[in-house]
Amino acid sequence: MHIVIMGCGRVGAALAQTLEQQGHTVAVVDRDPTAFRRLGSGFGGRRVTGIGFDQDTLREAGIEDAGAFAAVSSGDNSNIIAARVAREMFGIENVAARIYDPRRAEVYQRLGIPTVATVRWTADQMLRRLLPSGAEPLWRDPSGSVQLAEVHTAPSWIGHKISRLQEETGVRVAFITRLGEAMVPTSRTVLQEGDLVHVMMRTDEIEKVEAAFAEGPEEGDR
Image 1 (cartoon, one colour):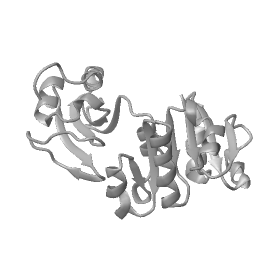
Image 2 (cartoon, rainbow, N blue to C red):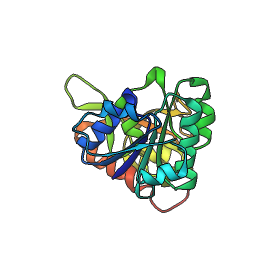
Image 3 (tube, rainbow, N blue to C red):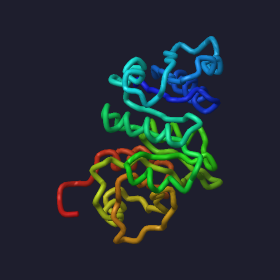
């Protein structure tokens, strides 16, 4: 996958290097050309000098061929504008924006753009938003037989009740992260766009659960 990153600070440089090591092609955009020094001489991706929400700059970075976009500059406003341009102008599905003011998170989430607040930011969280697939283990019991994991949920599950998700996948939903806040769902809770689903499951059933979440619900009523 080709991925465009706006911002070449410590976060952007770390993301770029990690993604390239995973086999993705990467373009990094920053208005300060000296910032690219953080990438090191071994970085093989594109270095594009310019404003990250400028459409011509994004095209130079290969946004039209990209599968994901990360806005991780030092400015909240720039990040959210760039994220919206990537999604609304270029149709990029996997978009994530880093923010410094967690109070803005709910507003951004309602715009359909996953955000990662600085106070709880990790490279793993940002990567998870850009490459949402499979299950991400969060906890395992001492024996390793049971685990808590965030499982990527297919868009076709949106609008369906948690009770149906549990029934068809055979797992128990421990909690949901919605608009940056954790919540314990009831059987009547309906999945919404942007929800992150965390489930308890047996470790030996990970592949089966991942497949069920990725395939979506069976035909029938919600």
